[in-house]
Length: 150
Image (cartoon, rainbow, N blue to C red):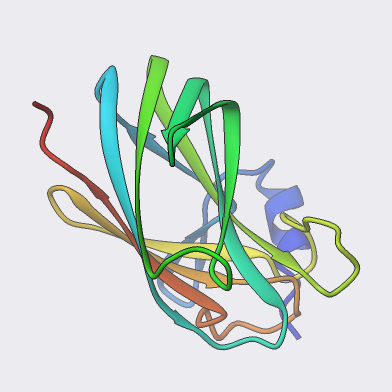
């Protein structure tokens, strides 16, 4: 039984080495001042509702709406591919996996929560483990791309 929460408490929230792979609670992505992001949900393997939360010092524009500071994107209600604009004062966008066990509460960062982050030039793949105390990292798999700025 793997409780990543305990390991992250020991590391004071810093990424940890787990079985030769870097595992983290959250990711921080450097973005342009006005950056379009594409989120693609690749797969889900959980009976809990899965999603991601994006946070920035600024706002997001999605579907004609301006949303301050943070946005949750749920795999079961969003299209497979979502494009949104982030306007960030500090040029950072933070990413964490979230889930709902059926109680209507957005859960993150406890019990088995962790993610493996694989980076390419403009593409980041997130292999997410939700709150169950396991280490399969397939509860939610998604890709985040930073599209060229115009």
